[in-house]
Image (cartoon, rainbow, N blue to C red; front, side, top):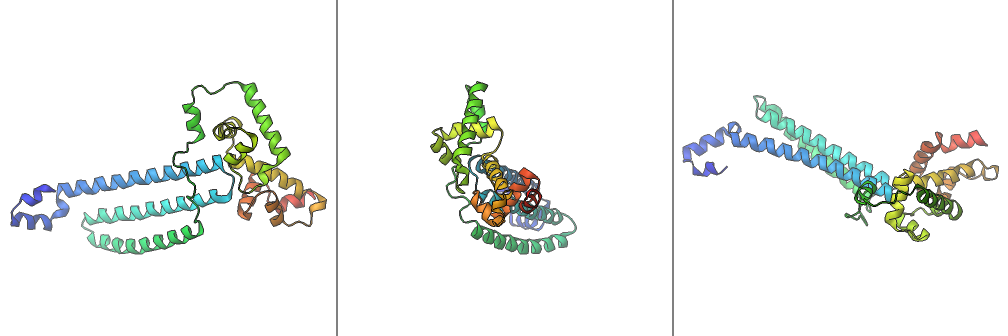
Length: 265
């Protein structure tokens, strides 16, 4: 507020005494809160895009790690909401409530920091090998105005891909991603991504898991494999997390692995 420095000492004292009623101060607070809201919206959009990119190009369990990033963004949003209330009371006749909320914010802030550090230690590789220039399939399709509309060719490619998946079983590799699969079938990763995510209509994550679950159902319904534990089965079909296996199995079959085995043995 440049005009503050142009005032005399008496006006400066009056300004500092009644600064909450100064128009520039109020406008500054409003603009600050609008800026924070914009940043929070952009944070949620960025996390959602990162999660979708991962699902379109990978089939590991790391996708679940993005859930805690959403939780962190929600916690920050809640922190901001309390800060907003604090400032509202700050410019009202209930300033004592603002003081209490300020104290609670310090505690809340400490909790968020501790929680964030704990989660970061449990997910050290979350942002490893992240390509900031990678694009969603929807963007690739929109940019490619000359995309081939030949349904016969698309169907042939889909059949060829599905046949390869059934014969060679690359999905058994827990670390399989779209780049590795594209190298195996000698198709550009970009084209393969569009084929699976756009033409087939599944995220690469779900596409790979559909084959893993089909393989798991065959094992679980085979009398010769009844001594195998569910844990052994999930590792055999390419999963490396019991929670992700149970979630995917329930999604594709409507049963838990144990329920499915009891029903089909």
